[in-house]
Image (tube, rainbow, N blue to C red; front, side, top):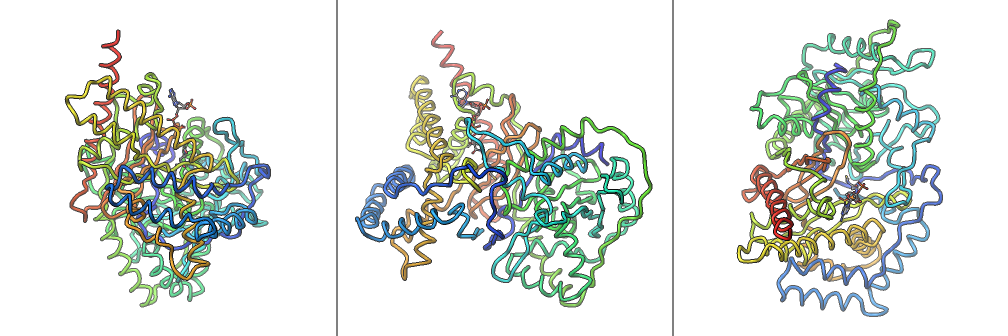
Amino acid sequence: MLGLLVRAVLRSGLVKPYHLVKPVSVTILPERSSHHQDNLPKLPVPPLRQTFERYLLMLEPLLSEEELDHTRKLVKEFLIPGGVGDRLQRSLERRASNKGNWVGTYCKYNKSLEGYRQLKICVDCETLPIEYLGGKPLCMDQYYQILSSCRIPGPKRDTVVNHAVGKVAPTHITVVHNFQFFILDMYNSDGSPLTVDQIYMQLEKVWNSSLQSNKEPIGILTSQHRNTWGKAYNNLIKDKTNKESVRAIQKSIFTVCLDAPMPQMSEQRYQSRVAAQMLHGGGSRWNSGNRWFDKTLQFIVGEDGTCGLVYEHAPAEGPPIVFLVDHVVEYMMEVVRTPMTPLPMPPKLRFNITPEVKKDIESAKQNMNIMSHDLDVNVVFFSDYGRNVPRAHKLSPDAFIQMALQLAYFRMYKMCCSTYESASLRMFALGRTDTIRSCSNESLKFVQAMEHPAKPNAEKVFLLDKACQAHREYTHMAIHGQAIDRHLLGLKLQAIEELTSMPEIFMDTAYAVAEHPNLSTSQAGAKTDCVMCFGPMVPDGYGVCYNPMADHINIAITAFNSCEETHAANFGRGVKKALRDMRSLLEETANAKQ
Ligand code: COA
């Protein structure tokens, strides 16, 4: 089992069910302090006028002149000195001066079994090495939130609990096979951690004692819409045995899902099928019940050696998860065999299925089947080149890939779209992310030129360079806390809290366009040759996650089958073509100069 995990991780699907489960509000309790990082700066509130100037600029490639004029008027009204904008900004600044991280204070987000151990020791002892970006230390808090934590549904609002922060940190993981959950203690009675062989033997015992599939895939309840699951959760934990079993899962360090075989696929579709398996388990007939989707971390291993992990997004962003995968893979290369001490059978968690719970399971199955059928996943391993080519041409690899996405979209739809790219805010205490708006006036000029056969290559290269520079500037601004999206959200939430009516600026079509990212993108750069995947943010959009390696790029694209206009494989082909055309453009132009 472990050997398969080592090999398969090298081409694994690393996925997060970000938008698969309908998001509702989540409360992260309690407000945390940054681990040994008291000197990190607080996230600033950007100047009001600066944000709205940039907001208008961001809207320019997305709106007609007439629409822009209307929005310019609304912005002007909003910014009248002493008016609503100033009032909301002051409230936001007050909030920021009181709290650790003003974005977090709204507390609402609508929306190798061995290698982990070194990380756990570092987490327990709070000795993880601090990471740096551009010479500045980054907030490490998210690393302390991924083990022994779980999201808990509520009828109106979810909470995230982290059991690692208590006096006695949990010592067990949960293992699920054929929809049956087991507790596997990772430590011997003398406190020493289990050896690789001991873990292997324990997993084998779990496997052999659960060869028959459970009739009721209890875990599928966690895939429901959050409010529905909140109600079903209360039904489930009315029973004392159920409550104890659920608690054991919630407290566990993480979950390991030993999956049943999935349907056979052509080689071409295999990676996309694996990504879908990691993301949702394939529906109630396959492995969707072999999960506890509320759990922050679930490692998944298929019978054919397919493996990866799925994570619940509320406690952390992608980078700590990618760090964990890199660490696990690196550690597993060094695994040494060790002597065996016999251990008892891992206990199985019992669930009493009342008629009410059974009904909830049936409804969750139906819902999961609809969602899993609707998700169109396409994994592209682009092997022509990676970070090396843009770097050789003195272009930022991230900006270059974003421009390829812009070009692919423009070619497919003859227009550009509101685009989201996540930018890390970890230079600030408890920072999460803000948005890089990859669609700009500069990106539009570049993609228009690319579709213009008469334009000379030198001009196209010039425009590509300008577009990449604009993207780098936005990135710099975003990671330094000066992007616009969190600020706009803060002002809007502040308006909900203290005003009787919503300012028109937030009711405007332009705001709806900006808030409808047809391209929701994220770089998940890992040392490991893996690919990360998430769902689209809007019904007619794409989710695009890429891992730019030195000489190739792994890209996962998602869309919804229920939308006639989107098609993940077509978009994937478009992205490949855009990347190839952009390289040819650079090389032909460079050769022509010589
Ligand atoms: N010429 C040559 N090299 C260049 C260059 C240029 N013009 N511009 C950049 N590079 C280099 C960089 O110096 C960097 O080198 P390094 O790897 O040796 O440090 C490398 O190319 C990559 O830089 P770039 O591609 O520009 O991207 P980045 O690494 O700065 O990443 C973000 C940009 C936005 C992805 C990053 O800032 C970030 O925020 N990451 C977190 C995103 C996140 O949270 N995602 C998960 C959400 S769930």
